[in-house]
Image (cartoon, rainbow over all chains, first blue to last red; front, side):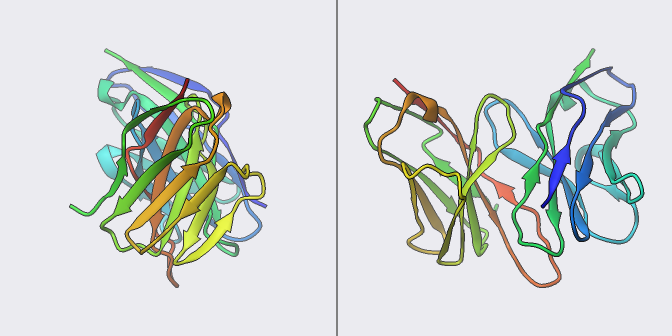
Length: 114
Length: 115
């Protein structure tokens, strides 16, 4: 079985401040981890993924994520948030030893105030 | 640009009146998915096609059906929509291959309203 937890329903930050969105996962095999962003009335947009290798993954729009195997976490980060980063963020996991379906977290709404 | 296209973007139907949502892709991906998403919740997988092989999720109601006539197109049929079926329906594609995985690419979604 595989699952994802996003412990924060909402994250509020001021523009220019660092942004962190938390994600923890559970899988039987090796984890394949993804972050997606969703703007209102739009589909999900892929931000970045971790498959193997370097624990720090860089993605689109200045986002990065750090894979931590011991803590089973894959937190999304951005050094300096923009108002345009305000959106709904989903973490997802796929079991490398299982099938290719994704399990999504419940989502975290990010609000960046000017 | 290669992409996933969904039509229509907004669909209004009446209670019990069948409706079909369409998805097309220019990515030539072998896997296509249909998700249901309600009120900014996590997308819920309804079913997916691996090439021509149909895979239904265990908890997907019988009211939902799907067709994939070729690699590029996939349809979601809701035979008798109920008020509880009002949601955003997302189509996604991925390329499943050894040495993967590739990420899923999502369409913009179709927002279904049931009156």
